Image 1 (cartoon, rainbow, N blue to C red):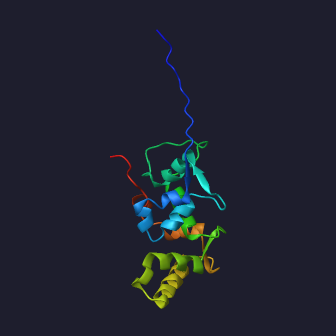
Image 2: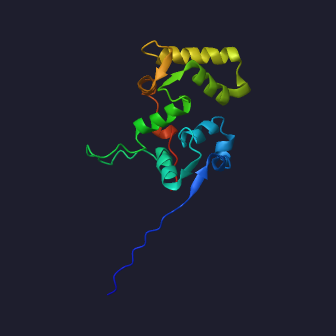
Image 3: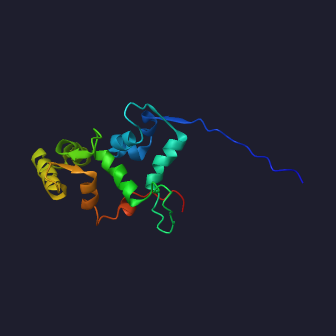
Length: 163
């Protein structure tokens, strides 16, 4: 009986930020640019296919049945990794904190003409007051995580690719 052949295929596919802009859902999303930006490190202009798939895996439903030993990295679809991904959509300067201005930028993009600047300022102020436990006028990842404890992140950040 002949031995089965094994092939190693190297996939050389590269994405640019502009390529993501062609996705209608991202183009129409008020924070689509931030979502696209989350796929790229600062100064990075292209993204290879394996990295694209790895980042996209944040949007898989959480597999609560999957056992992990202490050696395995937490899956990208875990609650913590989903929250870290969401956090970086706000933390544009990547200093580990969401400043009032960063929060306002997201609110402006999401709410556009629906509310006044005064209302936006009020929403941002209240969000900072509620989440900022150490009173440094910014929201750390830990504060962000705690403020979203009761939110079903898996439902909000999951895309079912196959049914």
